[in-house]
Image (cartoon, rainbow, N blue to C red; front, side, top):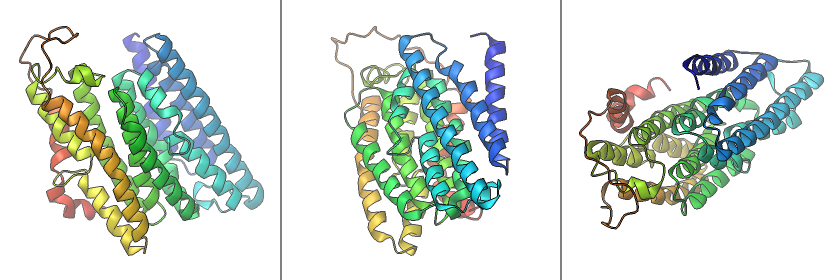
Length: 346
């Protein structure tokens, strides 16, 4: 892909995201989502591999269906109430359809089926965009319409997402699929709290995006996409592998890392809302995903490859760690001590 084409597609992504997050009208929000979808498709399919073409096709069909549902819910609400304003969504059937549309856009269970396959067929940098930037516009719409949505339905979907994200990620050997199921599991944490404390959902999304960006950029630097090749990276880049270990523990939500902060706040808020059983269930289900994060961390730093490995031996070249990854690792592991400062913004 030429640099000019990359520039056009990246600019379109930023434009589509900006249009959606800054709009009050359903039609402009829908137009922004469509621009986003069309701009990311060439970035998914740029390798021309059959798996990449398949991923782009699956992504297009799913996102087109979700956009059609979103527009249908907006039209139904406008038909009954005369309101096209995003925050004035009051009709119950329209709210139900919108929940399904946004769940499909985000990859929230039970509409998660497309996300692991699409991520597996995409390059690591595109997979990073799909996991973070592409989820920002639908997350903004979820935030804006949160007072109208059904909290019971969102709670059930959230618990299902956390369960499926944990269970289905256990047996995976492809790192992109593991990170896709990790994303589905994290979306459960965001969805369960959106009706009660929407700003916590956004905080969770920002911190999740920060930590996931660190993981993807580290994997992209060490050129790894399978667990078997991850085992050989310690001898090549020990510093990056150590950073990856800390970031994965943060993504798992273990104290004293940054990833513990949103989980701690969400459990606290759910308990305040007399939802202790839901908080207990989602906390126990997140232990499933902790297992595959520890498996990734173990493969990255503790496992030494056998001498009879089938992979080409890597020369130990001591390249300096990119400064962006160093800064991202620092922020994605060490923000917990300044949590009082973060809480003033929530």
